[in-house]
Amino acid sequence: MARGFNKAILMGNLARDPEVRYTTSKQAVAKLTVAVNRQWKNRDGEVQDQADFIPVVVWGSQAENCERYLRKGSPVLVEGRIQVRNYESGTGERRWVTEVVAQGVTFLGARKESGEGFSPDTDTGSRGGSLREKGFGDEFVMDISEMDDVKDEGEDADIPF
Image 1 (cartoon, helix red, strand yellow):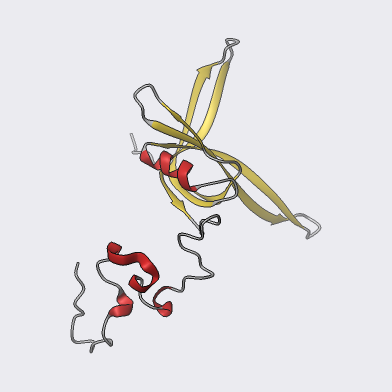
Image 2 (cartoon, rainbow, N blue to C red; image 1 turned 135 degrees about the vertical axis):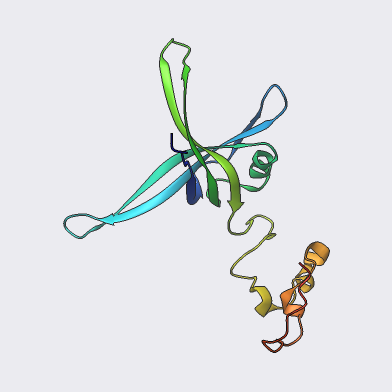
């Protein structure tokens, strides 16, 4: 039997605030709904817009981070796998659920309420000075903007990894 491959990558905005609950073993689980927009042209050449609302489940400390840092409208990149499960409802009906189980959630954009985090409008990377000067301190072992002039191609740069 051939080995399967199940990978989902979503980039969109949260349709609502993350909803976090805890299992009986005290493990956090967050439910997110990611709105992914798509466009196409109809037969008349008019641009059509539609959003797909995709349920995502995040486990563990990443679920707690989602609750702490994400809000409705936050842009995210989710990497995970598609899962289909079923359960019996209170009325005895069999229900099927398709969702993405996140293996990683990347927070895109800046935190609006406090001005912390990365903002493409204000941070310019190495062009805007050292990361240490921007207050990131010792989080980065080496900042490329602090390197001396580029060496000749025959020499190797001293990179600490």
